[in-house]
Image (cartoon, rainbow, N blue to C red; front, top):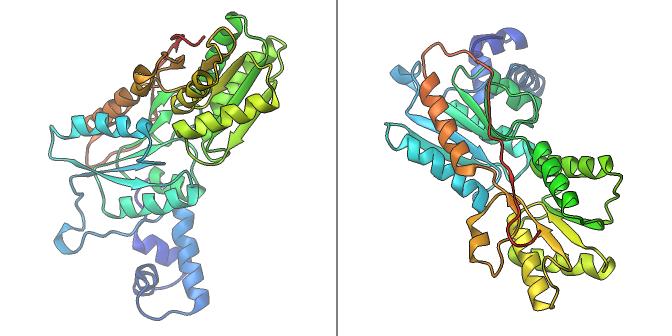
Length: 334
């Protein structure tokens, strides 16, 4: 379907009247369990989104841009939102935010709710979605920008970095510095697809050099300085002869640095450390940790610009990919 699905489409697919389909989708009025299931299945199969704008406004969009991110507590996404907001504040458009908490089913619900208000554009972090969420975005009829990651097939517009390349280039830089016994510490596993791709790229660089990862510590929760300290201690207790640790984030690597300082571990002589994201937090640490800048502010800014550039009444997806290519910053810890 190359257009936004309508209530009539759903009623025809489910073989019911438009009134019955409307009652089911609004959750009002009576309908048998069989009918309800048939209508909901039809709606999900084509990515139907209900229209929240009533009466004379029903054919128009509102000056909103929906933004769906995994977290608003992370330094990473705060900078993305700042870049996006800085562009939109020069227009009549306002961003509205939804949080998926790294859960694709939650993300699907948030996207459905966002699109139901017929915004001028939609920005979504990542390229991994449920089938229903992807169909909704494909049929939205507005610019949809997937951000942060370019390793995959975008629905429409795409702005980000290659996380596989980021992990790979970091791995190569670490090996070139002479480190041989490497460890890895990652958080939000297995839900953070971008962190997983960096780990895959890192492992590829090691495999090409015939180097085996000596040890790893994966954690399902989020990144904090305290957790970085704790997991570094745990990894080194188990494998004390590691000479380098690669972390999934700068927050964790900074926590690792604090553990080293508190326990008289010389960095980088005894232990090298590297993270990801290029966070400003690093500049407040006793040593500047190695990293790779993820261009968070620039990605948010470019996403907003794309929505403004492509805003039109009869919009069709254009499949445009904009990739930022960051370099490894060695800092003081490699």
